[in-house]
Image 1 (cartoon, rainbow, N blue to C red):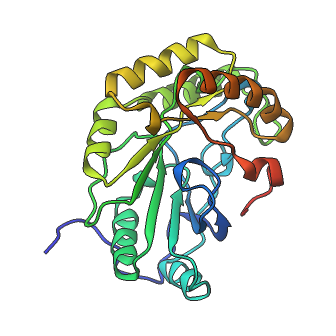
Image 2: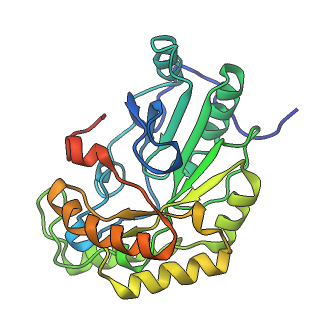
Length: 264
């Protein structure tokens, strides 16, 4: 019998801020109808300059409290029997080991394909492997900048900024955890975020890909942007570079269609 942690009380509040149906819009599973489960809490505080803050800043920069239980997850699938995909995202869902493990058991029972989005900070063992690890490592182009305007409209001052940078860098590019994660679970792709201009960030990304030794067709470059305007700046630059270097590109159509609207 497994000794890994599981959820015992299905009515207990969990660190989940959103459960909704959508169409997967990034990477190798793009186009599949899915139930999105978004956890709150994150090891990182991502800021991409013109590309803005993390597009789910309400799980990291200004984290909201969880408001759903496991019965809510079951209901989402009971109400949508045609959906056989799950997107577990955050925040940083691997912070919540018992929840992740319970979801792999639930998915195994229901024949649901699980994708988990993670920055790779923590290696996570589960009773059943995830169908896909959607890995988005955080590079130097994601570090918060003092003086930036936060999502709540305040300016990031030096004291708060120093704490935020320290927190962000603490587990950034945890290569050992990333290698274990990719080896343990069924399949993966890697989604580096890049604006198409920052040559230093690109060099760091390529060095990382060389270190973990992954084939080009597992790498989907993701244009930086949290709005149509910012994406339209990075789109053509990333497009041209990917075309000329043999990687793949993921389009992020949910931002094009809905911008910062939640639960889409």
